[in-house]
Amino acid sequence: MAKRILALALACLLLGAAALAEVTGPLFEAERMSDSGAENSGAFIYTQDRLEGLVDLEGNVLAEAQFGDLSYVSYGYYEATNEGGFNNSALVTTAGEALTPFEYSDFTVVSPNWAIGVVLEGTDDKDAADYNVIFGESDYATIVRNDVYYLPEQRLAGTLERKQYSRAREAGIGGWLLVEDWDGGITAYDAQFNAAETLLTSMYDAELIITSENELSPKALYSAVTGEKLSDKTYASLSGIANGYTAYYDGDTRLYGILNAQGEELCAPSFNVVSSSLYDGHYVKVTVNKEDGTSAEGLYDLEARALAVPALYERIYTWGDKSPINDGYVCVEQDGKLGFIDLEGNVTCPIQYAKDSVNYYGCTLGATDLTGTVTIIAADGVVTPLEGVKEIATKNSLTDSDGYFLTVKNADDQQGVVDWHGEQIVDFVLEYSACVYGSDCLFTGASIYKLER
Image 1 (tube, rainbow, N blue to C red):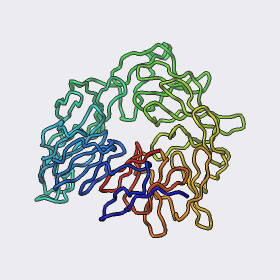
Image 2 (spheres, rainbow, N blue to C red):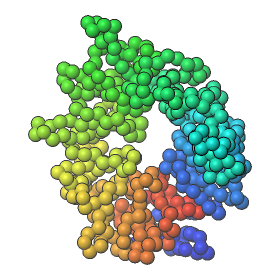
Image 3 (cartoon, rainbow, N blue to C red):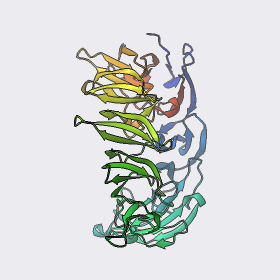
Image 4 (cartoon, rainbow, N blue to C red):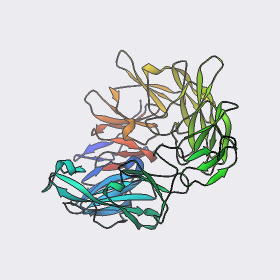
């Protein structure tokens, strides 16, 4: 098996002279790097001269090292802190732009549009505390206020008192901020932070509801957030998916269709089950019951308004919470066995591998037999036993890669990288923290390399 090798020199990973074009770099190096949040933000935190900044997966510096500490929050935003104690943090973008003053102790980013900054004060009263304090003069902290920011305009929208805010989410209809207070009450706020009455009684309620003036009048579709009438059509029940998409049940066909946030029908009643999970913003799993009493899953594209994968298989696999589509391939199960299809429905890898004997890694499967031999099965059907490999080290919770490249371990627990056909791209010189991210970025904990396909 041909090898493309990275040499270990001066305790740093440097590109060896014998390495070919499959590895490029290092694209970026620092004293220390962290991949916290990288799979969602597309950036790594790096440390230089005891200050922290951000660099993208291609090695481009997004924010110069200027912060005392950076920690990932969500939706691509970071909390930046320059000094210790309470209320010295700001919410920043991957470009290092501060969206708030440095006067908060904690942040919740509800959505790309809404964030909440928490101001705290110390207390030694455990019963009145909202936070435990690891370092500081007080053992506990209590909430002084919750400041709500409307992020598109980088604007402080309003303030919620301690018991006015327990949790929040953004409505799929109109971008309303839905806030639940400590007593379970729900309030809807518009972009100007004007409070409005809402029909929602739970954060889990569907955002579209069916109601009628009386038992004999026609049922109509309303926004549960604003009470606005959206349609005069009749529906038996509704259940939320995500981003305002809603599955509706048709009593005549006993099947589910799909509506968007405005109540427009995207899919006529066609499925026995519609999943509440949304992938890549527009794919949803659907299930149909077959005549033999079994069921089959498919994948519906809400943008194309068509099945991307026909409902023909017992199960469509997802890699952690990632999309079921990896490099154009979808892993499917039939009769307890796994294989791959493409988005044209062609079987690209025979559906013949027992699900209990393989692990799923995006566009590859991995298996270890009784002799300890590790084998990679690519989505295009190529099967390769791996020489000198003890186990596949890739973990789905740590990577946004599609599985084309995998980190592997040898008998000495050193890590290397192979591609989906088992060709060794990086020899066993990597530290345990190395992993492959989206755009084929090899992250080593101190350096970034590009893996070329």
